[in-house]
Amino acid sequence: MKLFVTFSFFFLSILGTTFAQVYEQSKTMSQGTRSAIVIDIPNTDEKLVGKIWQSFTKDFYDSKTKWNRKTDEWVTAEADIVSLGMGNDVNLYTTAEKSGDGVIFTMWTDLGDSFLSAKDNPERYREAEKLLMRFALEVAKEEVKFELKDEEKNLKDFSSDLKKLQNEKERYEKDIEKAKEAIVKAEEAIEKNIQDQEDMVKKIELQEQQVEVVRKKLNDL
Image (tube, rainbow, N blue to C red):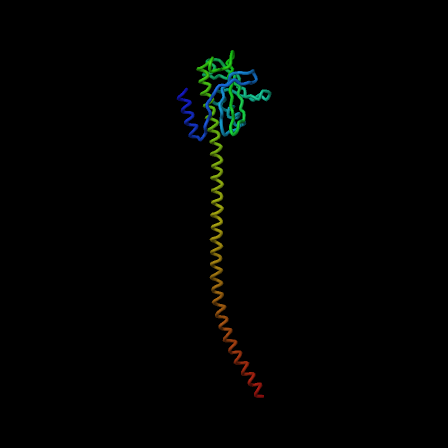
């Protein structure tokens, strides 16, 4: 038990998640005030925890968990969990209460003639602790999957932004090429304009001479 808890806490710390110690508490539920095992699961919400609990009991213990609207509890009836029932089926009652950024997850274990407690069932209680630690690990994994999905989306968005920037760069480069071509054409046009001006100046000079010739002719009449 000590080795398992130590390893679990170490693994969860690698995931960047710190779990409070699993503890026993007498709490009120649909069957009265009973001994329960409680664990604080940070950085999650009660809806996700409930959904994962359903999958957890089905995948690990082949047990069906249903939501009881009247009692606000998840009920796993007649679950064949050997480490808890020791050959007999058990009924699990669980709740997930929002607390700050996390959830307080509580589990009551009905053994048939009594509810599981550390005092009366020390070995089974330790197994129940292991069960909750495994469950908390599944929640942590799911949260990391969500985080990974978000980061992958961010990566996709950044890649899309980079593509847009690359396309913009290509457009700017094309604009520059067009501008360069326009500059070359304008420079050629300027050269031609200068030549045309020189030609026109010569024409004007010739025309001025012609004007003087005609003016002189007029004066000679």
